[in-house]
Structures are given as C-alpha cells and as structure tokens.
Image 1 (cartoon, one colour):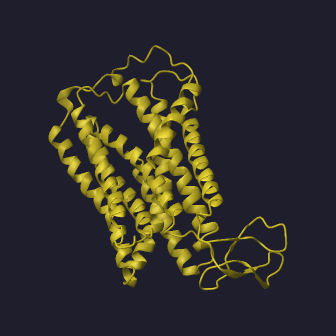
Image 2 (tube, rainbow, N blue to C red):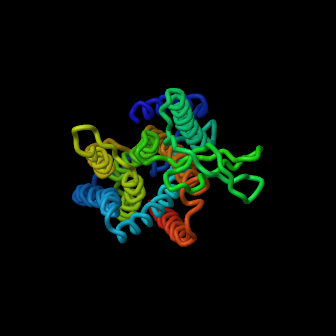
Image 3 (cartoon, helix red, strand yellow):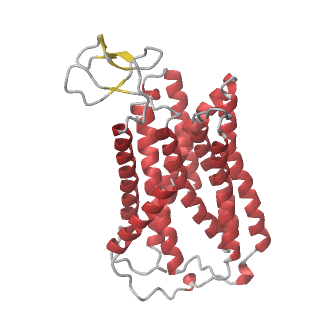
Length: 369
C-alpha cells in the first residue's frame, strides 16, 4: 500500500504542475488571510481534543471488528455487524462527495491562494487519483491472473442461467459450494452468460481493497487533524462535528476490516494482529495530526497559500481514492454483481436503510466541517 500511495503522490504532483498554470502573484490583502493571533488560541481545549478524538476514532474502528468476531457465534452481533457494514458504505461515499470533494473545491477557490489559471484543479486531481488507483488495481489483477494467482477464488462446476430464457442449464462454469447459481455478466451476447465468482474475503485482492480504502482515509485524517490542531476561530464547532465525523468514519472502515478473513500460517496462531494494527492506525492518526497542529500553530497559517495548496491537493487525492473504493468496490461489486443482488428482500431492505442512514449522517455533518 505504501508504494501505491507514494506513486499516487508523485503522479498527482506532476499533474498539478501541468494543470494549475500560473497563480497570480498578488494574494488578497484581506485580514482573513493573516495568521491568527496567539490570544485567540485555547491550548487546553486543543490538548483535550487529542484524547477525545482518539477515543471517538477508537470506538468507531474497533467496535465493528469486535462485533464481526462475536458474530461468528452470536446471531445478534452478526445482524448488528451487517447493519454497520452497509451504514459504513454510506459513510464512505458521503465522505468522498460531501467532505473531501467539497473541501477541495472550497480550498482551491479560497481568495488567499490567488486566482487559478485552471479552475477545475480540484476535480482534475481527484480524477487523476482515481485513474491511478484504477490502473494499479487493473494491472495488479492482470499480473495475478497470468501467474495463476486469481484475485477471486477458483470454484468448481456450477449451474448457471441462460440469458435468453428462464431455464437453468448445466455448464462447466464456476460456482460456490452450495450449488447456487453464480452471478452473471450483464453484457451477454451468446446463449450463456459468463458467471462472476464471489470475492473471497481471505484473498489478497480483498485485503488490498480495504488497505486502499484506509489509505485514502488516512490522508484525509492527517490533514483534518493538523488543521484542527492549528485552528483558533470556530474551533469548538469544528471540534464537536469532528467527534461524530471520526466516529462514523471509523465505523465505515472498521466494518470493512472486520469483514476480512485473516489466514493462518502453519505453526502459528491466526495473524489477527494485522487487523488490530489497521484499526489502531486509524485510531491514532487524527490525534497525531492534532498534536502536530498544536506544535506548529504559531507558524501555521490555515489561510496561508502553501498550507491551502497542501490541504487541497491531499483532499483531492483522498477524494479520488474513496470515490473509486466507494462506488466500484462497495456499491457495484457488492450490490450489482455481488451477494446483495440475489439475497432476500428483508436483507435488501435492511441494507438499503442502513446505507441511506450512513449517507444522511455523514452528509449532515458536512455542514459543520
């Protein structure tokens, strides 16, 4: 994941240099672009925010994982985890649209930066980020397939449906162990549709998808932490909103981490420490950002040109990553060609309600962040 993140930064840094053109040398002389005075800064409240957001992030990230573990033997926890999983999908999609993308638009339109020679800089960076992640995903899948390391598990023979009739015919196509018809390619030109196999939650592909998702969230969390740590005016409102922001965002990420299956190595116990490490990384990253912001608040100007450019670029990168993850890997892969397509109406209704609640909750918080 770290190599991908680094390559994304390099490519998008080049993209910015190509598309942004020249900024005007004159930045607005408005007082709002001046650094805030030390008298407006409440150090005690900022220090407290480090621990409050640490707790909120920890509850959000660890709770779904714990429920996922208990869900193996407890029907109640299994149902709660199912609700949190799709609630988290809504959180992630709303985070990309209503927080990251919106913030990047506002940042690049800030008068303290100056006039942009290329106005759609924010969506251009987000588009570039999304395309880089897609290319990495695509060529990674090709590499795995050519080395006989499928990103989805190879499955035995199955029965699949014919696209031109309602009858079921036998075929030497993959299926699962329960002999249920597999998901079909929606673009069928011949008599039989090509089946699509379930994504194995223990596969490297599934783990990569979640690590990619966390990478986009971590980018975002660092920047909001630094900005909050250095903020003085309007700190209380932003702080309160970010408590819920981190809690809900953690629920979304934690549900995805908890859904993974962690393989056992011969002679060792289940290597579950990786999932706890991923939860802990999200838990501490925002607090680390706040601590950095506190340390540099005297020299950090939240309306400074360099600071705004850095925040805008990273928010745009994160938006592209989460848009790809949320729309392609979560909505399309799980609903259109995944488990949710042929499940019961009751599960579909529950998942849809959870999804829309997540969308609404995170979109609402966007009013104050």
